[in-house]
Length: 165
Length: 165
DNA sequence: CACAATTGAATTGCTCACAACTTAAATCGC
DNA sequence: GCGATTTAAGTTGTGAGCAATTCAATTGTG
Image (tube, rainbow over the protein chains, first blue to last red):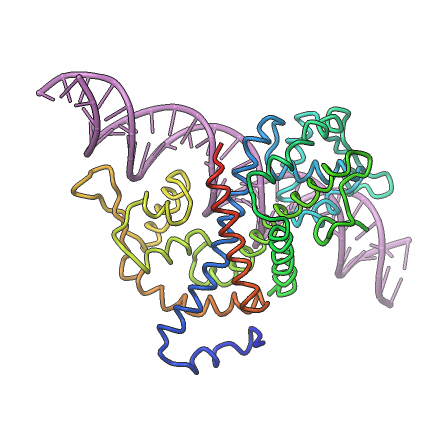
């Protein structure tokens, strides 16, 4: 598998430039575009369900993490969700202003925010319990297909993280 | 060390509730989250390549469509990209201000914008010709896997569009 | 023909994503 | 110990996405 530094040769080797370039471009474009469109559609499909909880999809992701484990830092949360403080800080402030999250400070390290749920934040979990099933219905498809989709997305994500340049 | 990124079945959100609901929730959540994270990572991976063309990924998508077919309306473009005028109008204005796109008016229907490329917009295509190969290297994986990923994304997208409620 | 309904774009307002930068606190090297 | 470096979080600015709304042009219906 050629890596980035060895790319121009293979490409110019097979002439009839238009056809090959266009085919490669086309397939590639369609994979990324399909991913992009499906992700947008997924977030859109969550909206009517999450509106009832007054949450956005990224906010819902944060709540999922905090329903599992409280007392984590913004950094840890960001590592789990692949989001940075520039995204999370304002999002967490919104969750705080809704009364769902507390943004404390670590006593061992004054830089660190310690994230906890309020009783209201904890209580919201039961209201969210029906969402996965509703989304499962919306997405449809066989379980095996969803597993395959997840696995392929995870593999692509891992590969994209590995090729940071 | 539980993380959201790479958990198969063993890691359920919480074991204190109904097992079926949690498993369903967990799997479902992870599919959507994987999709969301992979799409974000994909856009991020495009950035250094597209920076050279002074394009964002959504702008690149618009250019791909216009490199194929000019003279289309905002509506037609939106149907192809699954984006609405609220997203496309400001984006197209940015492409226009960069001198890549012309936003004319249809003479048959004064409501309709007719989108065309400037010579600079057309010329940019050759500069973009290497991008698909570079992205192909970044994403990695077998061709069959990418085809499967695309097919599963397309199926999910179609299903999500079908279940508009 | 008139006028109600529909349609294509644009606008407004809100919330991500993220690069680039800043600030303050902790840690490292010597 | 102490300056240099690293790290955690926050800030700023730009560009999506999209719901809701507006407006004008077109179409449909009587």
